Image (spheres, rainbow, N blue to C red):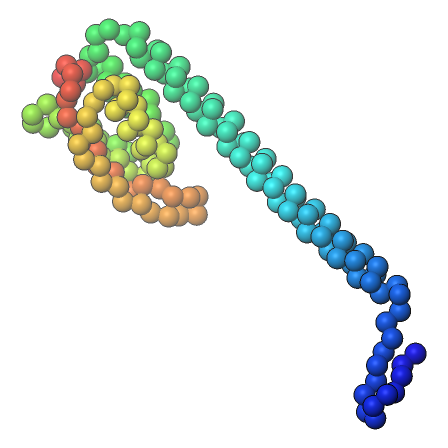
Amino acid sequence: MSWKLIPGVYFVRIPKLTLPFFILIIIIFYIVILSWESKNLSKKYHSLKSDIVYYSSVAKDLKMKKNNISQYVNYSSNMFYTHIVDILDKEGITYQVSLLEHNSLSINIDNAQLSDVLNLLLILYYYEKVEVSHVKIHKKVNENGDYIIGAIISLNKLAKRIE
């Protein structure tokens, strides 16, 4: 099937079936790529779906805490410390709450997860209406994940809730 017109140069005659064969290969390659992309997108979808379920349950818990907190009219220092203890009273977390001058508090936290510290800040600022004036966080990574080895939170009194 080859012709020799010029010495040393061969011209190959392409059969009529090669063009459909190349089109078939391209279509199969395209289908493989589409199936791989759909698999990746479904993984991302399920991951995002589980994140949404988690964060909606956390938001529901925070809303329930807000409703429970808003039922109290007179906040005492015991109620304020109770919220701090509820958040930080977990195994391995050490914390110290000290009342400073000018009606401000200092909270020193050790061996806590970052989510616990952020949860504490959210509860104090949003629900307790306490101004957070200074936050200093030192992070340490261990085999169980990120842990806070030092977090100092200074709070200023906005309302007569801290006594």
